[in-house]
Structures are given as structure tokens and as C-alpha cells.
Length: 337
Length: 271
Image 1 (spheres, helix red, strand yellow):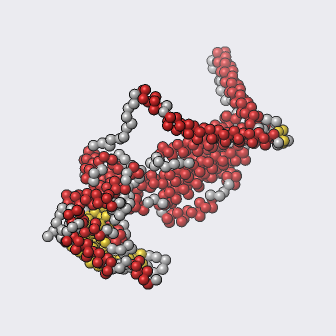
Image 2 (spheres, one colour):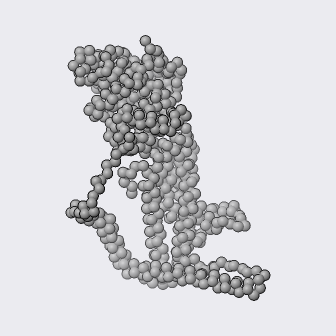
Image 3 (tube, helix red, strand yellow):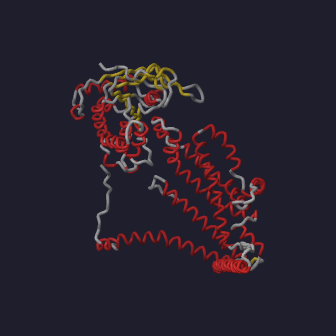
């Protein structure tokens, strides 16, 4: 007794080929190509043209505003700098090794020191730092927000207790939290062998504090709006609280939980850049601030590269969340945007 | 005669809190149901049929009176009183099989082995003729099929009483007829005790041993109880021309449209 799925008839190679190239299929492919590639491509071209046009007309104290061309040049030079810095680093360690080996050969009882390389962080290093920070902050926020949202969604009384607090903290800017978080982290995170950098924790917790709220609010709404009938089914079956949450509440609320998570991650990424800029914590924000202070003729171009990279990373993060949502969601028909 | 008081609805009344005066939906509802009996509750919209059903299910608590099942009072929901909801109430993220499994595991986890559980789920799905779609999601099924699965889920719990809240109300006439026949067939074989809410006079006469007709609310109660002494198995085509069948129909219609005018009509005259 098993379901018999409707499978396509198996076609011969030749027939497959014919099917691939019949007119209707071609037209479908064309349509899709236009929708997926041509239209977005056209949009980007128009944008680049307008950008160049505007850039030509803006002269700043640091020279002309960078157009697409200069930005491309700068992005290449940033990658080159990164490569150069890496080879310097490797060379440094090689020299150190040779020196230490020689020292040991001369005198086997000599103490050798291994120093770590202290070159400046490159653009790519800063991207990596930022990604790590936002991932950590977002994870902390999610671990707090989803359970809190589920509890508040299930219990009206708890919701009434916590709602004023949520509404008060929700609109607070990350910049307001930053000094407090900095001081608290300095005071509480005292360790001889720190696992995390203090600056890293400061940025991550600031991110967490700001990206908590969209997930909390959306989870509450998702949990509170479960179909009455499904709750009654659960009551008739006398499901225990934990089973009820696992089998009924979470699957039901998953679309809104993900809406919240996506908003949170986007918020977190924005907040992070601001926090890094203000606190001079390592990351893309610091890169931008350093370039601004540096004030060379290339600075604006380099900042523009950072702006684009921030945007593209934000876009990729959201796409990843969307893919995860599609993977986890039971409703495969739903169109997710 | 079998135990006439298998399920007893005793002196049940209920009041709902509103912003003003509390609203009295039911008053003095009394009914004794025998094991294996098929009862229909019929009445105009808003007369409290669903409220009665929800009180029997334990989803609402009566303000006065109570429900006695096999000599014991019941005041909270439980799998011994399974409910078939009007809109199937299947978990949309579970397949047909998993939906039934959720219920079966709740009831039989301790008494059946894994293999027995699987056989039992499949057996119940075959009772409602859904064995061809066990691994489909509810969204891939038609309304009638979803309702079949909803019924299978309840049957699989082996409830003492099967409660059905307008189970076929959302279906088209042909699908409804099919499901009514299936339900009659299953009830014949399993001897379930059933309380079904319906708006459909033909359905009530065709399926029921007794039809309980309710007065209009507020403070609704049981108006009349009509015993349907038609031999089983019943065939809708044969009965369509049966004088006894038509006589029962007429009695229900008379109650609904002469003795208990539709409250909406009353308002129209008053307005």
C-alpha cells in the first residue's frame, strides 16, 4: 500500500533532445531568461549610467566623486593590497622560523620566541571580521528572541507584561546602546586568556540588542494567530506543552518567525556598520572611517567599494535566509519574497 | 435495550462573559444517548448547536450541569470524544499519514507496537478510502478528501463518542452524498456513538437514529426529539420516494420553519 507518484515517462535520448528544443520549451526558456537576466541587467546598466553622469558633476575637496570606473579600479587595488599583505605575513613567519632554527642550532637550550604578525587589517580581513560579528550577534539574538516570542505568543498575560518593555526598547538606536555595552563588557568580561576580543563582543552585543525585536514581535504574532481548530485538535489529543509547541506551534508560526529573522538580520547588518564606525571596532565600519580620516584622492572610491560590498553582503545574507526558509517551510507553494 | 444512558447531557446551561450583561447561550439542555446511537443536532444558525458539541467535547465548560460519559463526569477535552471539525483541521505541514499518526501515537503509544500502529493508521485510512494518498499534504487534496482524512483521524482514536461539527457543510452536494454513504457504512460496521451537527434536513433524516431539534437562542434548549425508525442499511435513492422518509423530513421542516421561525426572518418583520 504505497502512493503511486505521477512520474514522467522515461524518454529516449533523442526524444529528450527533441523535447528540449521544441518551440514551446524555447519560448519558455526565453521568457525566463528575459525575466531573470535581461531585465535586472538593464536596470543595473541604467543605474551605472546615471551614477557616472552624476559623479562627473560632483567635485569634492578630495577630488571628483568616484564613478563606476574608479570604484572598479579601487576594488582591484584593495584585493592586490590584501595579497601583498598576505605574502608579507608569510615572509615574516618564514624569516622568524629560519631565525629560530638557527638560534636553536647554535644553542639547543636557547628559548625561542614566536611572535605573531601585526600588519594592518586589509579590506578583506575587515569583511571577514564584520561577518563573524554579525553572525555571533544574530545568533545570540535569535536564541533569546524565538523562545521569548513563543512564550509571549502562548500566554496573553506574559505578553501584557512584556509588551511595554519591547515597545520601549524597539526604537532605540544602536548608537545609544554602544557606550553602555562597551562599559558593561569591559567591566564584566575580565579574563586572562580571553576567547573573544572585547571589541568583538561589544559590537556583537550591540547588534544583538538591536536585532532582537523584529524576531520577538513577529514570533509573537505568528504564535498568537494559530488556527483555533488546530489548537482544539491539540487539546482533544491532550498533547503536552512541549509536544504542542513542537508539533503545532512552531510549524504554524514558522513563516512569521522567518519574516522576523530576516528583518533582524538586515537590521543587525546595518547596526553593525554604525557600531564599528563609532566604536572604532574592527570591521567594515572602521575601514570606512579610516579611509575618511585618511583623506587621500582614492578614499572616496574605496569607501564606495565598501558601500557596495556592504549592500551586496546584505543581499546575500537575506538570500541565504530565504533559502533556509524555503528549505524549512512546509508550504512549498508559497511565494516568498 | 442497551445502556440508554451511555452519554448523558445533564441540565447543561452556559453563559458567556461579554462587555455588558453575560450572554446566556444554553439553558436546561438534557439528553441521554445510547451506545451506538447516531444523533443529529439541527436548528437555526446561532441556536447553540456548536456550543452543545463543544461542551460535550470539553472545549467549553458548562456554567451549570455537566456531561456524564459511562457514568463519569467529563469536563476537559480528551481523545475519548474525538471531534471532526467543519474545516477538517488537519495540520497543513503534515502528510495524510502523519496527521493520523499524530493522533494514533497519542492514544496508542503505550499499547501498540510500531508495526501495529502503522497497520492501524493504514486500516483507518482505507476505511475512508484514502489509502491512495497517504503521503500527500492536505494542500494537495480536495475538500472532500481532507474531510475523509479528518474522519479517519478521529476513527483511529477509537473514541467512545464521535463528535462532528457540520462535517460536510463546506462540501459540494455530490461529494457530501458520497461521504454520507461512507459514514453510514462505517457506523454500521463499527457501531460508533455519534453526535453530528447539521443544517441539512435530508442529511439528518438519512443518517440519524434520532434528530434533536433545538429552539432558537438566546437561552436555547432542546425543542423536540424525533426518532427515525427507518431500517438500515438505508439507501438514499430508495428513500427519496419513501413516504415514511418524507414524513420525517416534513416533521423536521415543520419544526424549523413553522414552530421555530428563523430569527433572521423575525427581525425582518420587527424591523
